[in-house]
Length: 323
Image (tube, rainbow, N blue to C red; front, top):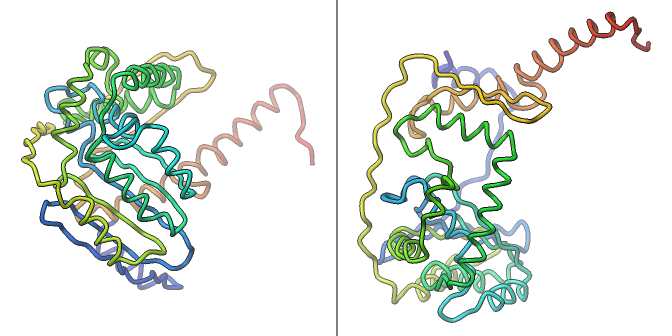
């Protein structure tokens, strides 16, 4: 079994030794609870400015399964108290920035990648969206349809369907059993008022982490963030109840018909939480077994078994492989 001792022994036998640059990141917690992490990196004249909010599909409480966090990912740049949608887009374009976002089980992340001269402007835009988004009704109606199309595309995607089925089978009580995007029937019942209420309760300074990495000056970034949030006090965060998942006592398997020419297959095992000492060994094991062309799974299925089947098929049809 792979464990820390085995990994250490393997590391002493392997050569060459891989070295990593020192971690020079600086971390501060502001008086209102906001966390700021900054790392200066002069390797290129660019910066990445990110805002992480502790709001994901598992934090939606009484609206669990509605995809509230995902809706806000779509809505936060649709206008603030001081900027319209077009003004936000124009400002990002003016500084040569690229903006994107994603939602996961326990977080929603927004980022703007910019030339170094635009880093402080990117901070301004992100802070404004985190605290002052207005979630206008007309934009909400548009994004509802955009997300419904996402639902439809997911239902037509066998890989995504398989993933949703896998999580729904592996977890019986934990919110991980539900897709991050939500369930369409619950999603269709949501109102703009409920989305606004969720935004006001989760997008608070003490639930935010700002991360800035690149060709910047850490002291300037800290001063900028402190000024942007100086009038934003910490707010009470309602606790989120996450039911404990009962231990799995036997094999669970499920099969679903899907109109596709290929067969999709997934296997999964429950592993400990990320802070558990066995997790690095499990990560290494997953790479050895299933990641890339040199993995055991790829070589066994693709190079060995598939080659045997191909030669058998050639013999059956009476053909001969070329030299």
